[in-house]
Length: 121
Image (cartoon, rainbow, N blue to C red):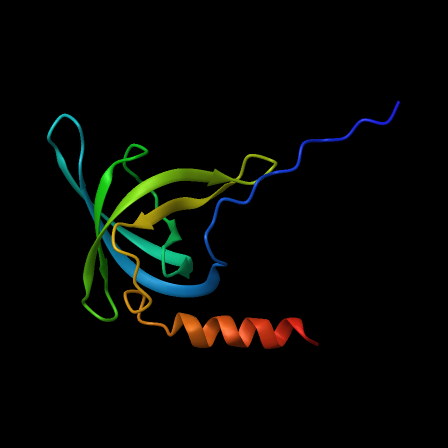
């Protein structure tokens, strides 16, 4: 009998690109406590990114992200905690409330074009 595993559905609207960007993340927990955590963006696109954080808010929580390289701030929400198939922590997935190609302070279009060219090799 041939068993087929279900395909994992890709839900991202565009590809993410590898970066190293220091960010500050602020959020308020349901009980009212205000939290602030240093993080590092590891993968980004205009809609959001994957952050490496030691402490993180509850899923669907509202966040304020500050790009520590540019000083620019924006609102986001936590959409999930990512783990590898063996259970290792990969990062915290966030979605920007207002998608922006400039928040991460990298030219997302240029990075995408470079990745596309790399794929042609």
